[in-house]
Length: 223
Ligand SMILES: CSC[C@@H](O)[C@@H](O)C(=O)COP(=O)(O)O
Ligand SMILES: [Zn+2]
View 1 (cartoon, rainbow, N blue to C red):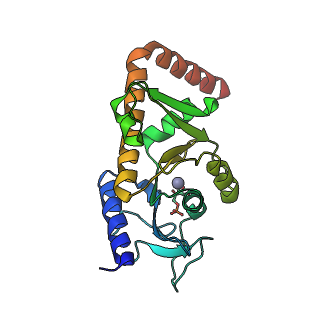
View 2: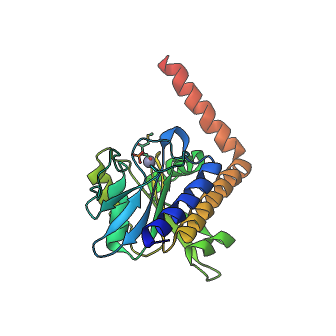
């Protein structure tokens, strides 16, 4: 198996696992893997397709500017520029983007603070943070519809070979050295989001109800 085939297989396997988790609702999500460095080439998912589908059109090869390297009728993911920011700035080998209810709700609850912070959670170790009092900060950026603006805002938070950024009411993008590690970071992030939401529900049921009632009150006033 040559390098390209190997990278294709690696990304296809992760894609299959994320599909089994139902993390590609409504054609959302996009994935990429580094194939070569000089010149930079990555496999990325095509735009607008159902990422649960398997076959010969799961990925296309693009260059460092996001242009298809070989003749194809497929369009690269609309968010290819975000993936490229990662590969230009770090030694990451794989990047994954998914929309889930949990990552969207967390991004809305903590969006005004610009980050969601975790501490004292075992799964922080998935981010290569091993100290007992380690703090994990996941930045939350605005969801600009202009992709170059989104990519610029996103790039401000790419500092290491492993990382994660939430895009408010949109989804999460994670990256790491290998496809396996990127999947690990993604799963750990989603675990932490689910935990945090469950905790908030138990700790603040009255606050939740109050907010809900106020919102309903507002809606009633609008009618
Ligand atoms: C189906 S709307 C979601 C898209 O706007 C986008 O956010 C997304 O994740 C998938 O875009 P794509 O161009 O298919 O890679
Ligand atoms: Zn998206």
